[in-house]
Length: 607
Image 1 (cartoon, one colour):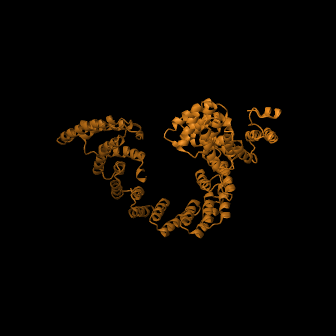
Image 2 (cartoon, one colour):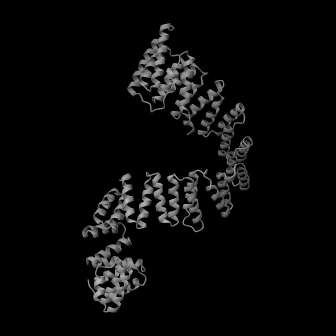
Image 3 (cartoon, one colour):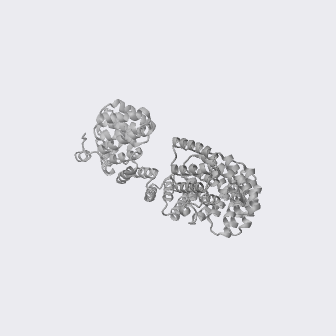
């Protein structure tokens, strides 16, 4: 916030030297500024004791005659010692010395100022305000006293008081016109736009046509929805800086934002004459042509903008994110890919460049390229969990089991409490026929996913498969039942559960019901047709199994489905058809049962 912009360094540097010299006391050795480290606050008891001592000693001092030379020397020594402890950030000792100096010289502006500073730095804002007010009253011509008071007030969110302090500063202190800018900022922070303009007008009277004044006034006019005056200030900036393209670009943006499209085109072209190839000018032109529905011109200027290494990566990412929301779309797929490639080319060591490029590749169906680009992003920034998640997701989708295990293990070293990484690690072990390791990862991840019903359901689905592989059938059934309790239409689980029951020859009526529901929903899925047929086969309903497998055999390339079809034909007496189906199964490749070669050799069914 603007009200937080008071420079502590400025206050302390100027305050130490100027306040000290005002009272004839030299600053501490070296004239160091007080460090901006976290202050050590006094306890409430310490503040109370110091205040009580101050009150007593102040009363005693009031009755005293003027200070003797020795007392003045002591007070100045105490002051100097207090300043030293402020610099060392030992605020209890600083306040102790300064308060003793205060009892001797309560009307000394520099002592009050240093007490205010020590209290401010130690977090005692109320006391800081009181002493700063006293310093201002005692020496109303020292600007640093006002600045410290304003800082103490702003730190307590007393913005109106801080504004009044700045107003008094510029009014009462000679040569303090430069503080009109801070005063204007304070008015702006409180949305007091007329007052801010008045302060800037006074600054303009003192300093002439300064760019900062015109720019601030322009922003105020925009907040007042006064476009003509805002544009006028923009023209003033351009006139004062005829070779500076940034003011021309700002004017073009203003025209574009307010639907003054011909003017925006004219001024953006002016910026390009000043700086050919300026990427910001091309972005403005692309935006204008987008509003005019000229996609070819939009693409032309976007490509020109992205060709420039000067284009900031955050601008590129923002534009690409807008395109990602439209993907996949044949009209913009290639443009998005090309812009993403340009982003990586312009920023080859930026993780976010690779990350957004991978997002584009993934959304346009280039999954292998996306996985590799995410890995490049991780080369420059391993701290983003989302990148690891995308990598293992794509490993799984691409059936890159070894990579899935390697990348999930690497991710878990950094994010051991992220359930999705445990899930994919378990899936990797399951695909590698390592069900015991899979169960360990999946059970651990499931515990981490406590409270997330959807994630736990995903874990249970894989645990059902893993426990089936381990022949721990009760646990497998329990995992599948848990999924179906929360998601009764999870067709992948309905299929797997019913198929494994059929292989075991258990709960066949339940298996038939689940497989039947799945086939009814997906009547052309060869895997689901095979499962349903195999349940019927196990129930010796060969005639019921045949049409399902016959339908599946017309499109499938799965060896096990073709083998099942041959088994059903054999049971129905079509031995020739059975052998033909088994031969197709052998040609289909791996996936058939170990009995297939024996069936073909003897031309006989074995179970």
